[in-house]
Length: 335
Image (cartoon, rainbow, N blue to C red):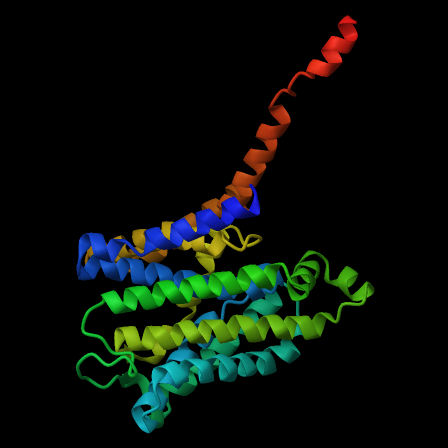
């Protein structure tokens, strides 16, 4: 597909995504499903920088999302700093924290690195759970009031819909550019074979720090939005199960693809919200059970995800397609 056609499709998809509030009006539940899909899609794409591109499987990204949420909330409540400014502070602050705590962990590989990310996540969660300044286990409640753009506070969900959509689009475009940059190629070389990357002169530790900074920083930005959307946060948002919720869309869509997390989020989050709303009272944690089943099926049947399956299907179709006859050659043979 040509570049111009791809651009037209992307623009058309963005315009189509702007239509639901105009068509269905202020339907809180449906708008909420869209918002959660955009929000989790954003965090999943952020996770994919470190986990998909660079091949460092983290199960601690709920921590970075939570730190972004808490940073923005504390700045708003304690210092009256606008959440828009809090987002920028969260990006750089949480990104730096991730780079610092991951630096000694990058000597670990495979499941050992993953276990270290879980341990760090639980450490931060317990810290916030026992810190009076941030409300301990009771959490933080955002200030009440009417619509206020600077405070990122709205009575209707529709402004949050367009904010979450804009966040998703901007992060998607940024990661698409990153994927085709020098950093992106270095990340993917490390993912495929770290020893080879070292051998050809790539500073693998440095590039993994870059990946950790960007991945955690963008997760923190999404967390800043999440805190203002819910108007309440507590340390439970940093539980490992929520990290799994961020990883699953990327695995379903395909961790090797920029659009994999987005495809996975569009498919899995509406299902999760439906199950949570209609069956949580009778089967507690049913959405987590469904996550586990889907994850097992994808890993066993199509580890490359839906986009990987589509790529394989397209390649097989092209190989099986008969070659078009050459009229010139046929005429030459008749002559």
